[in-house]
Image (cartoon, rainbow, N blue to C red; front, side):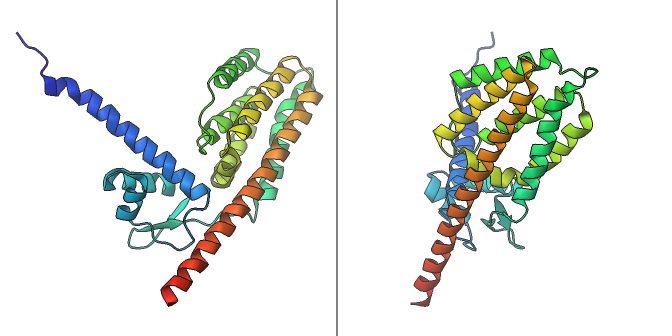
Length: 248
């Protein structure tokens, strides 16, 4: 009779532990980058990053590759990584476009021939009540849930072209928008605002929903600009300090 060996039984558990370790390394490195722990121009070597995170070089390397895909790290020609400078140049213009798209997706249902997808709205509402009951950590990862809310709400209005444009804008501002979700209070407030906006749309209080969306996006822009600027200043101070140390 075939019996599962002790080694075979440990296999899935070992793989799950390895996945968890890689995810934790990625989240912690992302937090360190977003809070300005590394100065501009500093080469992030695998060994040094691994030591900082308390992991081996493999999960450290994977974390850096993921942050490069997130556009939070840039890559040298030889494959090494360094922190990408937050791009605030076009941020206000892109937020203005994002706001116009999202408010339009809400108010277009003021036309009697257009209605929001009720089933979709109920699904969004139920999902965010569940998220409120068990909120995620404030480490920047909330950006994925946040984007999913705004895209789903936009899609419920029925204009797919607007949805596609919003997704394009989201992709451009995502690296900077992560700065919005580094504290538990911002995550909790965003969750509450998502629920309030959805409930206003479900009640067909579209002017109210549009105003809530304006306030929601406006507050996000203020937080992002402030925190990204603070992180940049910290990175610049780190670069200056490193330069002085090397010159002595």
